Image (spheres, helix red, strand yellow):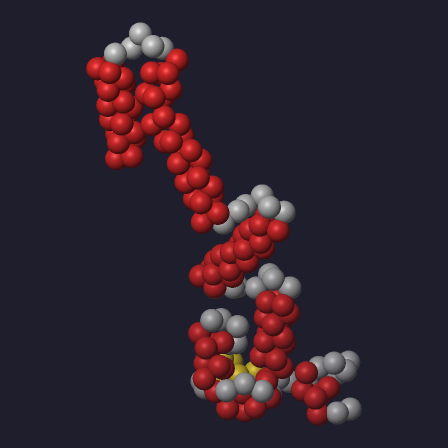
Length: 163
């Protein structure tokens, strides 16, 4: 029977749990002394006596804690979990946006602005051409009427431009 089997109790004979210091437990678990203190404060490890830990119980408790964290059932920090969730959501949104751009469901704002500017220039030109077109088609309109129509169109365009 090896020392590890004897200490951890994997053989039929259950030896009395050996008490060790925090430094010795840290060495057994491959952790720092500081991490042992953190795990004790978190309730993962429990002191069996003053400044002593039950080696077998501590190893089993640490392993159980690590298994539960690996499977997602551990006592995870809520802030950490929230941050991981936000990061995952941001990554998913970034991917969805990239896919939408690739499918041409989304187009760059500069392209939209350029297209709308061209359309609005055409609308403005058509509106400003109305007085002369009306004068040609409706010969009974006086210059005063044409100037009034022109002024109203320009006022309306300026009003729209200011809003």
